[in-house]
Length: 487
Image (cartoon, rainbow, N blue to C red):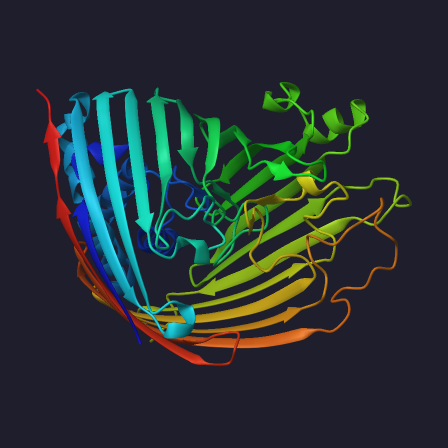
């Protein structure tokens, strides 16, 4: 049996721009968007700031007040408004001009079975500062007794299993159409119920410099980041590694969104930061060819369509190392397709999601180990990795803003292919999907959530793991606020 207790500082008005939203709020925002599309915010491009979401929620609530809305939408908007109340009040009263400091702490303790280490304690500490309406700073530290269990952890154990690291440490500069950031934060681009193909967001956070630009229906994102060094064969030497990415997203009215993204991982023993890859207006694929390079360039196109008031469609196509001559080697691709049914007659508050993800062998990999699509022990891309596919079915039943029941079933197939498979050069033609011995997994789960207030959240969950054992867990979240504003 697992028990999780969270004590966290609540949001203050300062968090309008500085602190990103948590996973529960992201999920609620995506469901609200499917019922009443946002006019500016794209909930599939993360991180998402609380202030940007607060503006959308305030607008949706104002429109809902003038007419009848479904109970599911009303419950979602109430849940989001409760979570974002300080930001909504700050926006309404124009308090964003003041300087402010916000601090919060999170303590978590998790009881586990002895096979997984018996117990785990976690301490989060957040500090956010708004110097003026344009400059923000956010810092988050995490102290953990079992962080080494997580692929997303990038660091070393201190003593007695304790680890400590900064998950966020960045400054943001905001103008009406431009937002620039510098420092450490996670990034996730693309569709998917629990991960995207290009940047899934569950890898270690990136030390980066980035910028977002909005112009009407267009939004552009770009960043350059340093990845972890990779030890190489020569004693005491390592390869430097870097990641660059840019993304252009287009809103097609309130019914659709289309985005095109490109990333590149490059590095080497004597490789320095490449300023060409820092130019967001350049095409990485062309840079790689013009320099006779062998960097790892990936393309992605993802889309979201509100096909009907009761049906949303979404998908993503990933191309790793595009081959336009069709003879050198096959394209290594992955794709994701999904649908969400909601607002079904006589089934108020019911959401049904279905998704299929397939990642072919050799995707994310590279003949040069330092160019593989990883950061630390985690994939930058989809969690299932190469040579695998997955069907995910999810049924969610909501009652007001306080109760939710989630029923999931994941069917996964995994071949023997791995991102670490050695390659001498080009990928051979005729490579089969799901190579070697295939492992099949069926992973059902049931979860009940109760969240009467944003500062009070509770859940109970039971799921089947890879060892075919049923693992129960339960948790609670209690939050306290602490913000001080200047004059």
